[in-house]
Length: 182
Length: 182
Image 1 (cartoon, rainbow over the protein chains, first blue to last red):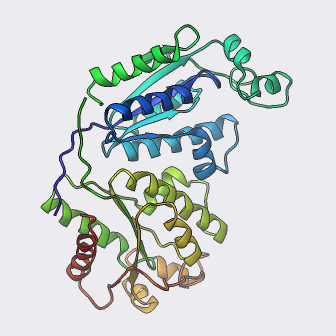
Image 2 (cartoon, helix red, strand yellow):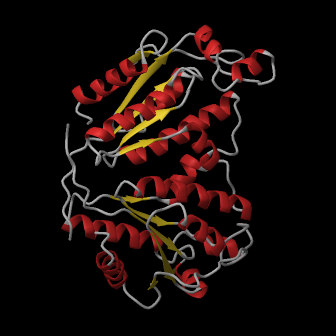
Image 3 (spheres, each protein chain N blue to C red):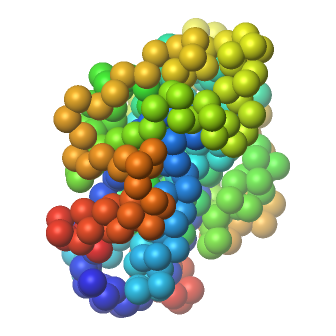
């Protein structure tokens, strides 16, 4: 029978922030950077779109559905991170209470606030969604026609409005490193 | 930065069979036995009830809902087993086509048929469900008022009607061992 020494401590790292704040970009950049140093490091990125497609096709964007969506992702993240995987979750998760509940589903959890003002993300508008939301073409759009509750006490803030991607990536990697997750 | 050598090859092992055939019992017994020999072995049991509660509260037991249920569990299993975890899935999964699709969501997959006749499981009736199903109190009950498509070409058959729990456990562990999954 094989033996295996567990050296990686699993973590669910939830990156919360407005659409377009840079959650996904930072996640993939961090994963790429970490893999350079250690190709064996176990990392999973739970991409919001992939999850909606595979676990949440029944859900819309009203509050109840968003809560269920966050809960399912949190359950999945907990099931993966418990096996020593660094799980990055770049998902808006606009409600403080839902993020708190998500925390309870993982042994190790950190909340990272990917911070950019609504002014800034509307200006970026990478996917053209803010234009549509402002025109009333998308309902329940976080930050425009739906609430976003900023984290009150996040474990880390990445101020993507004022810092470069490299700076954000370095800050997050440093957080993982000093807390023993990589 | 920590280093980690991956020595465990992940696998999704789906145990399909009628309610009461012994899927869950075998799964927990196998996990317990494996942990005795190697406490560091990574094992996850995706219990049907826990999954329904956390990922599938919206789903019932008609064919469409069952297919969605199986698909979500398969997605979850794939996400976990890819990180070198032995994932046991004791879930009825009555449709051949759905099991085939489930297979595609994991890098390594095996289908184990936990075989016991409807006569035998009705006699066992551990949860009292067959009595209710036969009385018409439960609709869409697999084997009574709903279809169960037996695996045509399973990787392993555990004949729990004619072999002891110890024999079934030993057969499954042997399968994992000769195929390099433990």
